[in-house]
Image (cartoon, rainbow, N blue to C red):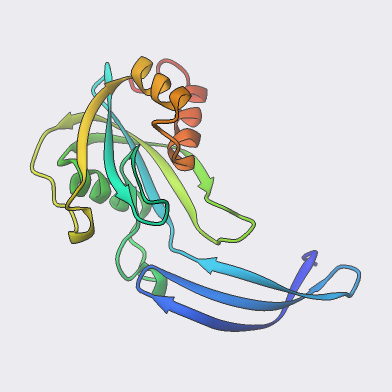
Length: 185
């Protein structure tokens, strides 16, 4: 038995990218409570490397009102209703859309939970190698996006200085480092 049981649920808000619901719950000791849950689809995050450098994208993040550097990442349209593409396809699509890069090889590094205390969203981290350049295919919301190559040393400087603060990017970098120095080979 789960330590928290959903007794009832109601949808509070929905748009194409998320659902907000409020659940009535019963805890292990029998006490009742509520839980607010943000439902978001599975995402893919891609660490693209040419062996010496890594590709980041920068865009304005409206909720925090700041531009941020991060690894390419995103979800598929319509995936809230169960139409999620296979994880590797989503990763390839996000890489192509945001950077124009196509990968000859994609290796899954691990899975991340975005904010499990309030959100159902989980994501897969991919390492993309054997890259070829092409035109990006950005969505309308990404029209201000920039893309550039950075060395590992520069990325870590940006993390220390607060230029990179995206939690998924920081966690993905950790997965890459845990995979070892030969991860990109």
